[in-house]
Amino acid sequence: MDQLPPGQAIAPLRRFGLTQFAGVLPTVPAHPVVTVTGAVRRPTQFDVATISGLPGRREQLSDLHCVTTWSATELKWGGVPFREAHEWLTGKVKPHPRCAWVVFVGLDGYRSCLRLDDALAEDVLLVDSLDGRPLTVELGAPLRLVAPAHYGYKSVRHVCAVEYRLKYDAGPGGWKGHPRGRVAHEERSRLLPGWLWRSVWRRALPLARRRYEAIDGRS
Ligand SMILES: Nc1nc2c(c(=O)[nH]1)N[C@H]1C(S)=C(S)[C@@H](COP(=O)(O)O)O[C@H]1N2
Ligand SMILES: [Mo]
Image 1 (tube, rainbow, N blue to C red):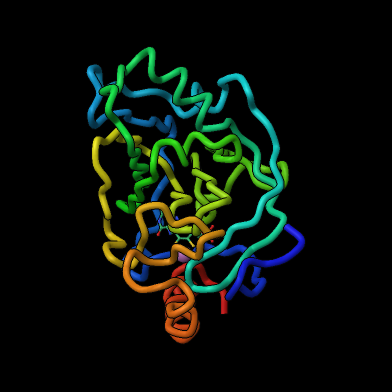
Image 2 (image 1 turned 120 degrees about the horizontal axis):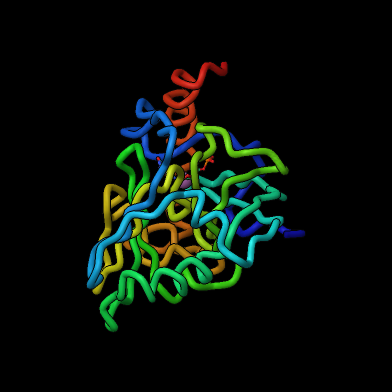
């Protein structure tokens, strides 16, 4: 992206999120799996390797915009479009026809809900590499969602479950998040207009960064 969205400033990519997850750096299992569940007829578990090996694999250059006003730009992710995984999964787990939302759950207990049609956009990927190298645990191994048109809180690291839903589930972010979280519409939170949050988040950012740095050993 040539121009940053309103209210954003460039920063390097480093592990970040809600402060309550800073201390939960998960261990990646030797044989990681993804459980597909929720409003489906046949909940099933799949190997991450099977999902990463689905057709449509590609590399994509995209930006990650965190709601707290930092943006990491030109990240070269490698993975499979969620759309491909969804098409393949649909035949196996049989989601309820009225599913309109999908929740991604991380090994750290974090979760985030996307509108299903947003998650099916062609730039939404399930990635296992960054800059041509396998994802590190800090940045989301074994599998991470990348949803570039949405604030970073939708891009769940360490995906271990996908839950099809009839309704929106706010998850641990609660009112802090927005059901759609589109960057182009500055949907930072479900409460109040997005621009109002810029200065609030800018002030909260250093403390949240320090919580993550304390765990990840940077200073
Ligand atoms: N599993 C998990 N995924 C997560 C989070 C988290 O705390 N746990 N935080 C989200 C938030 S708020 C942001 S901005 C991005 C940050 O991505 P990064 O950790 O690669 O910088 O991860 C998102 N995905
Ligand atoms: Mo974020």
